[in-house]
Length: 286
Image 1 (cartoon, rainbow, N blue to C red):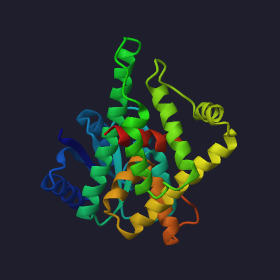
Image 2 (image 1 turned 135 degrees about the vertical axis):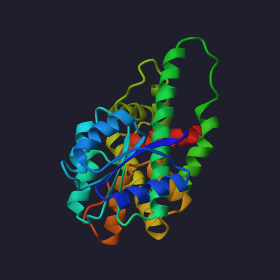
Image 3 (image 1 turned 180 degrees about the vertical axis):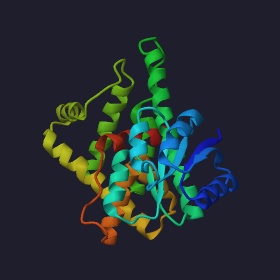
Image 4 (image 1 turned 30 degrees about the vertical axis):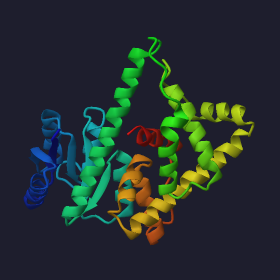
């Protein structure tokens, strides 16, 4: 399905450049545009775009304030475009909920790559939602037993571990075991779970204390992020980097780790164990 875009920037030349890239790269269609933050509210709510490309500094209200107002009113994904290099402002933008930050002048390859990442992220969320709805409908309906978790998913999950360089980590096995537990919970009538409950359940199964399991898992996932960040520094368009950096992590945190590697920040990127394991499950089901 063709993506719908709204472009918000007070520079008409930037709006035209972005529109040309979108159309010439067959990314979708621009269904709305405007030059200030206040008008953008109405344009976005009426146009119902999939993706909004918005400047950080706008007349009326800035891009961050615009996003905060609309975050609960739209399902659109936001990509911020700005010439600002202030790490504080960029961090503020990510905290407000943007998916990616693109520096001006706009680079064709970067914009196309970022839009594709956002599209994949949206697709992931839609599939997870659809799976949850489907399992809720058929839970307890006497459907045939599915093939075993190990038979179906273990080869794919361990291939992912190999791709991101953690197959030799002690935590990799625990991540696989947790993925099995979480998969069962996601297919239960309740479908919800808390991570500490998964740790406790695994601890009882393998007779290892929760703290040790958590340390192993976090160490392995941290190493995976570091490996991907280093890969992205060397080759931003590497296929493995493009796939795993968005499927398993919040990309802003991978970028933060890349900034640390570059010496642009004193802080590492942060991992999210739940997102990582649910991402692994999604990749294994593809």
